[in-house]
Length: 209
Image (tube, rainbow, N blue to C red):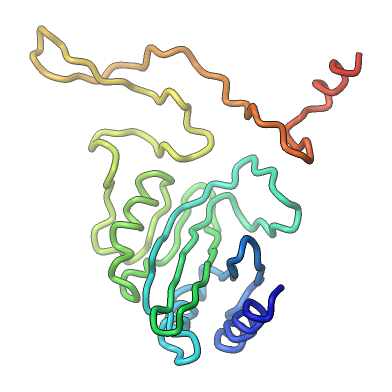
C-alpha cells in the first residue's frame, strides 16, 4: 500500500471510527465496507467531514455475488451488495464503499438520496436490474426495462435468453409478448483463469485420461 492510500485509509478510519469496516486497496482504489445499519450515518460523515469532503457521488451499482469464485480474501457477507463511488472535488481523492444487503430473498438498503440527490436514478437502476430495494427512496420504480418486465436481468440466475420476447401480431395490430423461442444457451465461462477456478474435478479427470 502506497503512502497516499495508507494516509487516505487512516483518515477514513479516523473519521468513521466504530462505523468503519474492512479497508482494502486494489487496482489503485481504496474500498471500505460498511454495514447496512450504519450506512447513512457513515455516508454523512464521509460527505461532511473537513478531512474527507466526499461531496460527490459519481456512481452507484448493484453486485450479485452468486457463484462468485474470486479471491478468498473477499469477506462475503451476503449475495447482493451495492457499491458506491465517492469523489472529493475540493481535495481530489476518491473512495469506493461497499455495503452488503442482509437478506437474499429481499435485498434491502437505506436510500442515500437524502445525502446525494443524484443517487435517485442510480438506485432505480440497481432496483430494476438486481431487485435491490432502497428504503426511503422517493420514487423507486423501473427505469430501463419495460413496465411489464418480469424479473431482474442482471441477476446471475436470470436466463441469458430471458423469459419472454416481443413480436408484432398482425391480427391484434399491436406488439404482444410471448414465451421466448430461443434455445437455452450455455452459461459456463469460456475463459480459463490462471488459478483454474472454473475447472471442475470431472473435467480435469477426463483431460488427464
